[in-house]
Length: 493
Image (cartoon, rainbow, N blue to C red; front, side):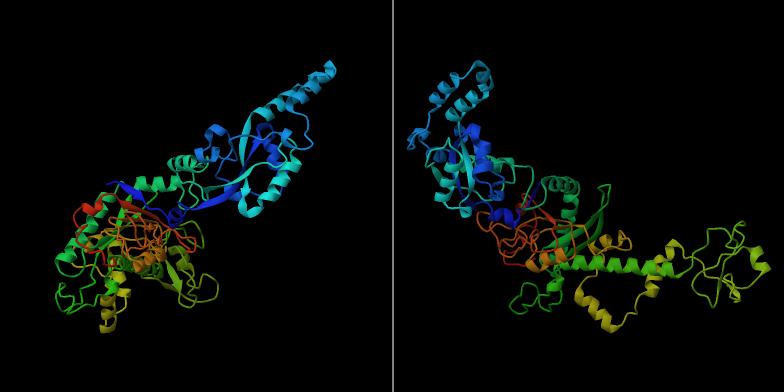
């Protein structure tokens, strides 16, 4: 399966936005002087992605047409010396001084013969008249009234070499700096895409199986998702799988939507899968608490003599702030509190639980099953369906204690999620999201608002005003695959 990263909302908005700037012709030898002296107080941060000086042959045709001829200094009144007069004047100097002025001769010839075209600054910074007067007063080689034209240039930096080439031919020579100012860095996006490609076929296939199962049973739409966790060795472990159960509470059949139009939004596949992860987090916390509450078998030497290996361990019934490790000899010689408080030591008879007892401990410490919390669990629909791929995914792996919900996990969804589920992905802190098919009418991850793939344009996965961003990819050609056409465009995934 081929993956394609989604565009951010800022990338889509930046495609057609332009900025008006001043351009003029300057001699090549005075280029640096034109920037440093003529426009000293203007910081051109708005044009940092554009070439400041450009040769005539690199200009687009419509910009080159603005400068059919070049005005010389002779157009001024009174007119100064021309370039030929200046060279003749230098030739009359003594030979020693002539040698010192060879560089000046070359500079004069170069300044008068090789023009460059410069972006001065955005139009919003200064008026054209003030800019022309400033340039003319600071650079004597320019005409009294230099030609200053206004052109449109790209307002934002390109996000690829191909885009930079198009902008260079259309507006002004543009530079691509191997970065993306509107989204994730290209190297990060590419590395994540390569890792996801290793497992996307398996996980997306499992998500489709979950969607097909619930749809056949009349419990929901043909939508499914899978959550996986990837370790430092790039190995992905299945964490949870869920299908859509929005119609599971209906008494009527799923097709009879007029008789029973209600659908439980908590039955959306994304919300169910996130709920399963939260359950596994709670189970891991319960097991950790059970193991920490029971004293472990000591593996150190006696706390009194520090020589003999421990054969037993004891605790003080009054000083409950720790376990006191004593060997048999030290225990026989004195049965008082090791802290010297005069309390009797009591033998600890609780043994460390074995690994196979972990599940029993979790069940023991779980709250009792009552009618109230039983209905609550059914309402949230975050329990896996029995004898289904959901059950195998849920019990096939265990989460480690600690961590926040789905932090930096991956989720594979058969369809683009709605705005509710998309926001749930951000709140759950997913690191990577893979969608199988776009939902232009209801989806909230894509950013395009025109063209063949136009949608709502929410682009929630990467917005500056939100406190979490993710990497989102779509599977190319997934719309025509099995399960792609079974969900109507009006369905909120």
